[in-house]
Image (cartoon, rainbow, N blue to C red):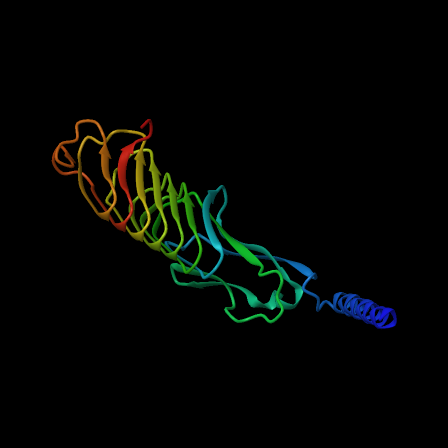
Length: 256
């Protein structure tokens, strides 16, 4: 019995040694799951003739911010197992007055993958007034801060949308996620829609005139603004339409 137990233990140690040696070889040849590599792509185009910006990302969060410069700067950063590094792609294409930016991680199954990897996409825009900004993601969040644009279309199939000090007309849509917009003043129309999530619009300055339409299938609807009556302030002004199937809707002052 002792001899049989000893053989089993010896065999187990041999298997462990083979596994360790195999992983060492895989690591040496950059085939091991423990071989990680940095994803770091940077591209740029002149913004002189650009008025229309389109940004797409399937799995990586998108951050769009202003900077003091004359180019549209695009950065894709993340980490991945070395053997899957080629799955990450960044494309920046200029066509007339439009620039199209697409970052993606190829959607395919990885056998024996330990680290799934991931990336973030950052787009830096010069401080000039753009005509239109379109951002689309599949399973990722969208964050836009301080961009001067006449009209924005922000769409996340599954993710949160955050906008701060964004000028112009704002359209936000997400299938599952929250939408949060913080503005100095509400000067333009806002339309936001989510199936499953909350929508919050915050303003620093109370509007003198505004028309609202808040509709939630299952959730609270709150308008906490001075002088509001029946969902409106005064006559005319921008229209704010918020819709959620399941979630709370709120239009309020920053100090609430």
